[in-house]
Length: 262
Length: 224
Image 1 (cartoon, rainbow over the protein chains, first blue to last red):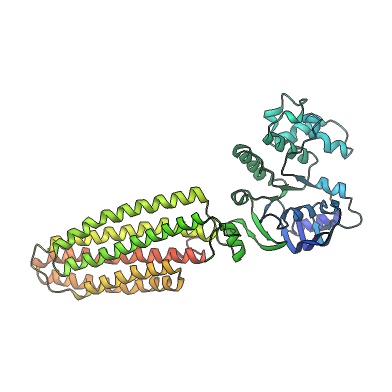
Image 2: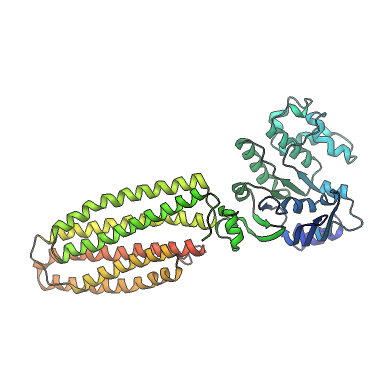
């Protein structure tokens, strides 16, 4: 059940994610500076920028993973469906179910089977009942079902890198998140596995909101509706993806997308 | 302008730009020479123009190839993407301008077989205007100057009005004396070629505005 405020926010056409004056630090390192942006529901936002620009920190603030790093601090607000992530009644574990995450390196649970990996989140959340159907649905959603349906009890490590990454996506989808954060989800994959992930992103967009960090600018251009360019912890430019890649407004964005940086 | 991190990318873009300028220079010369072959009744010069067009065609192929290579190897974005897609489009216009100059040279060779019709001042004026438009559109491209490009687009009206006067003048000559018809008809074709050449210069100018500003000024209202 969505909180009442969230229902109202959605009816008013409010953004799915609303970031206001977000600042983040690692001890003295000011990693994000006054970032404000919104992400509409059922859209894909791509975050681009050179290494160390704050893009991973940004997505980690969206499901309160940033605060898990020792010495990390943040200020400003992140609202999902109008609800402040740092409101006292927000349980971070429950939040991370609603705002799922997929990482650069596929990280399936190595001792678990394929099916158990998908169901792991459900078990952790104390969801009882028949996992079989949920496992199948999640694997289908992650476009992995046909490849693994005959070996669901095999170790997750028996899968290829691209399949492992889709397994992690299936695991994230099993708990029915509303937002999926993806930090370089295809950077370690071959072009075919990458294309599968990109196709998947476009399909998932129908049912959830996605924020993807990528160093691959063609990938950002292909999968996203909007693109945000970060540099040295600042949000330099945020706009429709086509505009960012064909006619950016900011000279620093222009330099970055055309390869004139450093 | 800031350099690319990969310097060979800059070298490839410069090479493309230089090829376009070489092509532009060649078609400008073709216009001037084709008109001189007509006004000075120099059929040898007309033959030269026709021969030079092979070089224009070769450059067109080279430019297309360079653009394709840049697109596939660099996946260009932003101003680079706009420059390369502009190059792909204006090369077609420039090559067509070369073809029109060849057409004028061919008409000149034909006309030079007969005694001259009375001097047609507006035809020379039209040729000068057309050549100036081509030159100005190329300058706008080289300098990335949208104001210059806008001037080219505005000036096309002048070209059109000179063309229409010329058509009337030539029709008058035909009505005066049927023996004028064959030559006046050829000159009518020359006039039409010059008018078309101006349109291609306008196309180049429109693409320059897109290249610099990222806004497409062609066919206003057609997106609605």
